[in-house]
Length: 231
Image (cartoon, rainbow, N blue to C red; front, side):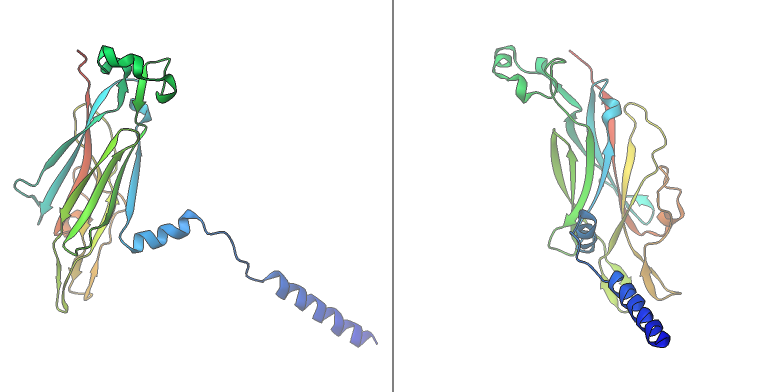
């Protein structure tokens, strides 16, 4: 009788453990979708600009292109994105009465709109030889730029593959170019017979990181914040 009771208790304990280890369906979150997006060529980096809202700055985005470690001639692109905040006084006087307080970011301070972040994103263009960059100033506007890509040559053929790294941001000075995102080609490792994009997780602002010397073609995307000269 005791033996039967003991076996029964073991069976109940085993069934209890088996039940506790069931796999349950959970709600899919953004992190789950991000894996799919990155696999499909979508990536984004966001940067906080709230510290600059005490003053007014003109924000320009600059894209620098490099091949074999050297700047590409005529490869620099500079785009003025706008000011980090737009005041009601920026409107012609006859239009100010038409602006409703509820449409303003801060009616008491006279701020019509302002940006608190900048996002640098990449997405496929539909062509292997081109990628799209999308730079967005939240609440202000965005711009799109096509990036020409170079193929990776291997004994088994050539194909396109690019990777990204954020830059290490050391300091800020008005009017100084601040690199934000490194967008570069993978390279062929003949010794290992594979293509790779491995190295530091952050790129040094002066491009002294070891990974940079191995990347045959890359872009540096950054910003310049110039103090606004008020009229």
